[in-house]
Length: 75
Image 1 (tube, helix red, strand yellow):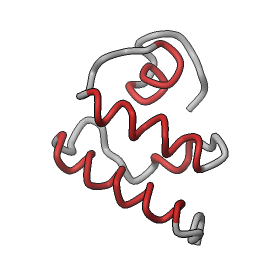
Image 2: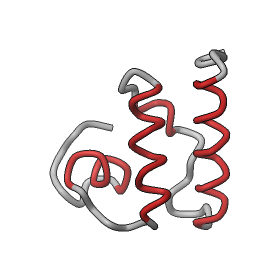
Image 3: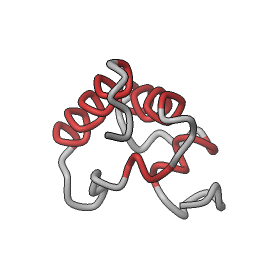
């Protein structure tokens, strides 16, 4: 996943093009998790943007945030 152009991927659109595909809380979590992961896109690999509901995306992002904040990171 590269920074790319607007429309290439919803995650990069939120991170680099201020897209509003998701709720403000989900957008904030995407940015926070990205920063906590030291800006690695692969942290989002388990999130299926096309199939996961907003609630599932939200829960996965919260779990990722908790994992990085606790120091577990990439384990």
